[in-house]
Length: 166
Image (cartoon, rainbow, N blue to C red; front, top):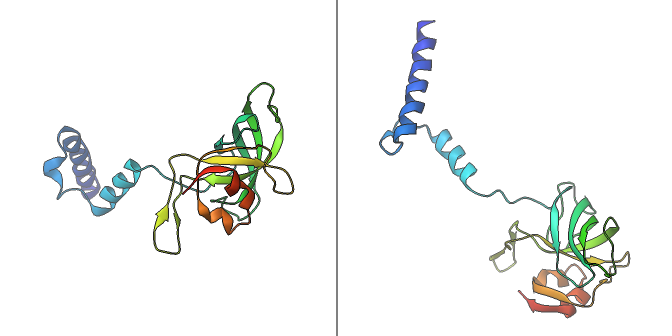
């Protein structure tokens, strides 16, 4: 009983002292706590999964979509994968309307993807190009950079419409 109360006092004192100035208490902080704190400080970049909001980078009329389902993989979608999405914001007079369920190809993802030459590619945002069921783009232009990995996934038409291939 006395050991437990002494241990609790040590942890309480350590948390109070860390709040005042954590720089001189490096030897009191366990390695597990520093690893946890560094992971919380970083932005976690994961797969594109259900309820992920994505920017639309073509001129189909949609501005923002929300992923309903990734059509490949259990975890979610990555660069070049096809998703089913619902249009959340749309421009008036566009080809797609708000609330419409559409297919899309992920052309930019915040999660990094390794290339065959050893480099890695990742983008600042998650972006999608809307396509029909046959995989042909709905819009006639694609804005922003598009990775050349789409060629391996048989989305050559999207690459031909893109302004910049990364």
